[in-house]
Amino acid sequence: MAENPYVIIGHTRKAHGIAGELKLFIEERYLEDFLKNERIFLDIKGTKIPYFVANVRGKGDMILQLEDVDNRDAALMLQGREVLLREKDLLLDEERELEIVEEETLEYEHLTGFLLIDKTLGVIGPITEVLEMPQQEMAFLTYQNREVLVPLNAQLIVEVDKQNKKVVMDLPEGLLGV
Image (tube, rainbow, N blue to C red; front, side, top):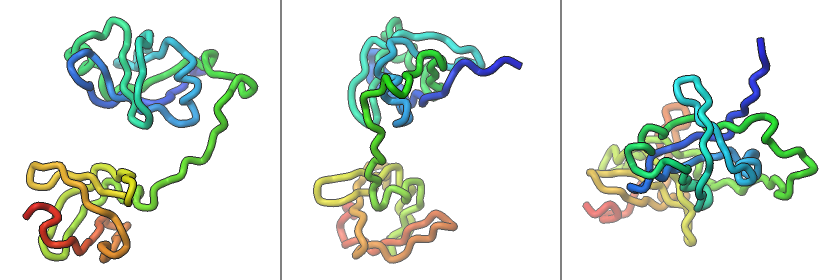
């Protein structure tokens, strides 16, 4: 059996805007490899299809523009795909410039995906993302068809049930606009 000459370095997320851009996640250890290559491969039904990178912007969740992908419909066909580089396109250790630094993780980042429950209001919804704001970390979630930010701090958190992926909070009255 032949060795796999490709390495999965990340994946496309959702289409972004109407110009054919895609949200993109690249594993930190492959970020420099990705930025120094002008061509990536996307896995489409088991076939590795080459695409040339026209533009990349943003940090964390990057926005990717591929050559010849210039409308939302084309981008929709590419969302949720593995992003690969050929092994021979990866940088050698001595070619690397960026020092891999252990990223400072957020204190409450592990709560992403947990169900947020308020002592008074009951189930609020699943935490979509934990964001770092200047004053504190915030849980981003949808409540009653609205996107809301809930402050995450020890004073408001009553209980964290890791086994059942639930976090019980005592939210200040009016915080959710109810």
